[in-house]
Image 1 (tube, rainbow, N blue to C red):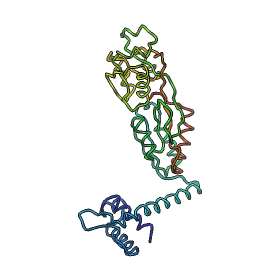
Image 2 (cartoon, rainbow, N blue to C red):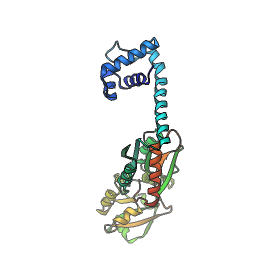
Image 3 (cartoon, one colour):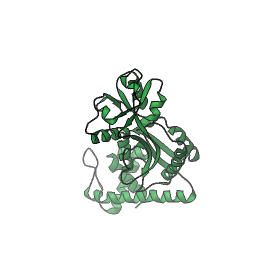
Image 4 (cartoon, rainbow, N blue to C red):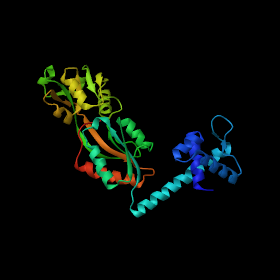
Length: 301
């Protein structure tokens, strides 16, 4: 029995056929079929049912499949252990970034990491904070920048990058432009402009309003804080923004401190605290923690 045969068997099951498995493995389809036939002869049982239009795993094949996956996973761990021992970092890392944190120069951070570890393949996605945390927990991401309104969920470690006030912002000709602050209760009847649900900022806003006995009424929702500021500057409502974003648009907006209670916007660097983490992911986490500790981002997600 060869590991290659197990690899081919798993690929056929995952892809649902020999042709797609061969394409995934970059080998000829007859070679895949021949190797699996050899494995079946050695085991004395058919692992795949080829009688229908699609290939299906047999009862014996279903029993073998988890062991085949475990053997391939063990081989991958052996390779990672050798890489770590020799000081070679390679593999893949998946990074997530909350959409509303676009002011952070994450491309520069990733470019610096790539120069140090050119053998590592890096992928990047944007999503809201809830989706990124779920992807971290599922092992689909190795690292993410997220907005959190509460403590990180179990199994996730974080490093705080930004902690700033949330403020209300209105156009310069709004009647509230004569004031410096408003209580949270004043948001009850105002049309609001906010980030969508699933973001840390919106979770913070919704929780504070619920504690005060009302539900906020967003007239506009957008994932870009800069767009929220532009909508508010044109008199379309009151934007709820991280203070740094409101300050960046001070020429068009009047900033109001929210009091009773005060709200905070947080951006956290997050990664899994449990489960297998490869050397490439560990190297990226170390790099990102060091860089972001010195150059905090602005904006809230």
